[in-house]
Image (cartoon, rainbow, N blue to C red; front, side):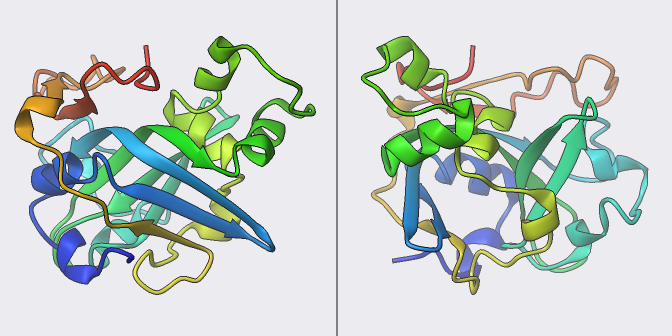
Length: 203
């Protein structure tokens, strides 16, 4: 069963933690991709300088102003796209970056999407590298900003998050977020959450 609106309109930090273990689902025609969310980062408000929306809403970040459950995708380094989920009630800005997933269905097709080659008994290292990072999971699931920016995970029939048993706190680790050393306010926040000992967590 897909997660409903009430899940996403809560405190951003709680959503980021509770997304661990849930299943991201992407339907592309007759293809179905599924991956367990194993790593997230919370971006909490306009004072969090690690957040793209810390300097106010722009055309790029406008979807952050919507009610939780919408998709926010942005480009980095001119070549990669990252997948975020808007949180909180409408007008209260927050988002969760999905950093890694563990593929569980549609693995062969996800492999083709990621590497542009046929799936032919690849080594475990290459399977893990398929989706153990925020840009990698976007490529593996063939998600694009043009198609999914602003889409609603609660109602969209192409993409959603399925519920799964909540992980216990002793299964979850937290740390500083990655690659935001420039953020004087926010870089030391422990807002990265990941499943302990899961090989798909980004390195």
